[in-house]
Length: 406
Image (cartoon, rainbow, N blue to C red; front, side, top):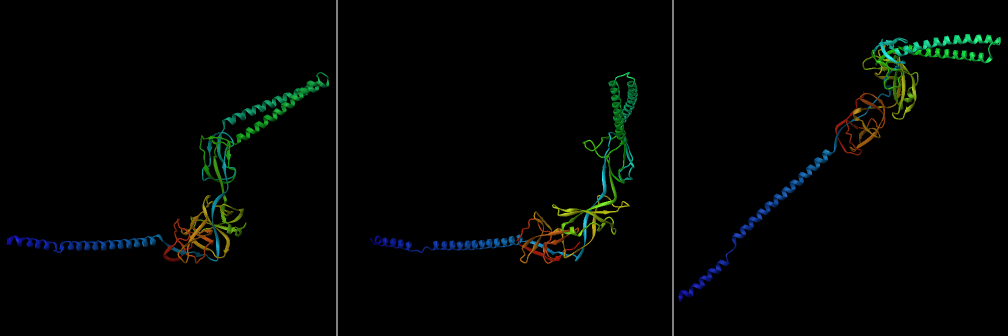
């Protein structure tokens, strides 16, 4: 009985001790979860911060690269009184294609390209068998007409004498007199036709109409020759150019039109003849400015007795005129060609682009003369991109310099 009374309290005591034991394992696990959460939170914040900083750096670099880096120069002032020099094209004083005036085949040519000929020199001969046959027929027709008119004249005279003795009627006399007049007209017609064919036959020899140089020969022996220049199968036999004197045509800008007048001395300079000048004078101008180019076509005649100057050459024409006032020189690699005109990209005080339209004067080779649009103090961009826009911000990467004058 004693053992039975003691056992229940012992089992109850053991049951209560298991309920009141602290949960040590679960607390430890919660601590590890909290540490891991803090670690990941710190890593996330750090990664977000780094990504934002990288984006800011990239944005700054993009903005910095978007700004155009340019080199600027200043225009070069030209002298207060500069010489008027304009480009010119040398042309022959007279140039003419030589066509045949009769049909046939080329028998022989006597002058080739580069030959200097005098007026009336024989250039070529044409074989004209058809014209020769027509000429022989015309001579025979004229002889026949002359024989007929002689007989008609004798007959008319006889009938006139018979009329005096009333041997024939007045009607017969009038008929024979009319026949005689008709035969006389036929003689005149035959003579005119013969003269026409003789002149046509004379065209078988082609002569130089003026003194000059043969610049082209388009035919050879045996070539079919057609008269005139109206058909597709016809072409000129020779091209003849008079090279003494020579004409030099100059397109003078509108701003210099009043500085050029007839009789003004003008000298040519060519690169193949350094140190030499070939002088002539202004003989005429077009009298009107071309609305397309705004230039005045001017002709300068230059003597060329030694034929040292050649047709088609390019020359710099120095006019005996001085241009007063301030003029600037701008290099060609600074020019922008827009539909509104020739421009340069000027950089203002805030490093923004200002497109200035220029008034161009002379072509100086690697540079041009500017009459209006900029001043000597305006910095403009060298080699500007075509896509540059007004107001665009730029960064000057090279200090300003003065453009070289040429």
